[in-house]
Length: 369
Image (cartoon, rainbow, N blue to C red; front, side, top):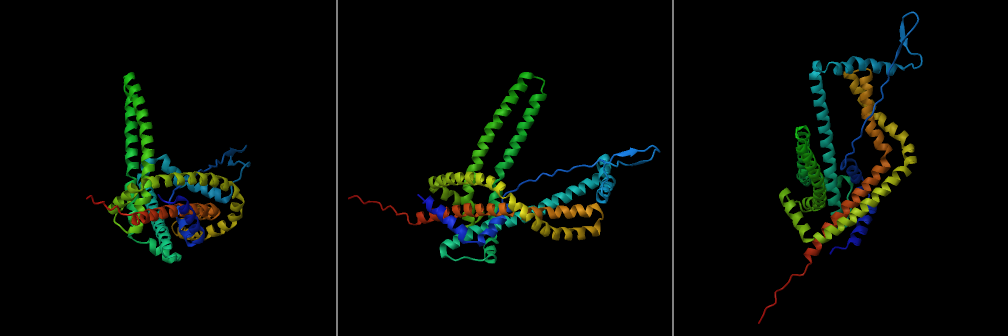
């Protein structure tokens, strides 16, 4: 049985004494999990009032600035016709969709590279620190992460995500069953089909949650077999499964401990989110200064192809990620610490399981007379 207390303390020691890991932890915090941000807009309606002489003009109760007037005119000339006569602008919608998909693909590829190289680097840096006690810089750490092992970790996650695809397909099938049951003329069949679809959905969702939790636990062994052992994808699955099967009690116990730590960190994170509001306010000015640089570059480039509000909108969209990245830097740093700590715990767990198996006494059969 592994020494869980020792592993937790050692991972904490590595976190605070190996500061280069913080950089990779921040990259993991930014890329390992995606938060979809919703956008909301407000529309301005410039009512026109008719005077006594029959002439029209802007309502004096609200006089929009030059930028808002230019933005409104540009919207009415370029955007509104797309929705008023969508059939006439099919090609435009296709090009917009293609540009959006390409943008998502580029961002996704960059995020995947940063994530898996950083995760591989953290695992190997912790392992090397435990073996030799030596620390490496960021450049050497990046070299440890930039190799085929990171790609194999990506493929492992891709294979593990296949149940998600199957789950979505199953939900689509249930949706079709529900639709056919409701639209069917037979009331009894409709009620029975609806009840069956809802019951199957709840049962399958529960089974799906259990499966994903189990696969999440196995992943800790799969990716470390690929990262630490340098094995191929198939061998990483087999080796990780064999390691888990031989030490499933220790693995399950460590998972429960990390689950409790994760819940505790989540509660602390919610409290820190509000306690750090003064820090956000202090960082607003530096964030604005930093965001001005990419915004100015985007404005200059966009001005070559477009003018007026379009260039400013592109500049603002480019500046926003940098602005929030700096403003919310304290939360990102805390998230990076948590990523490093959990990764270190599972790396040390994997190492200790291997060490225990290496020193396990061999049973010598007793010869009978």
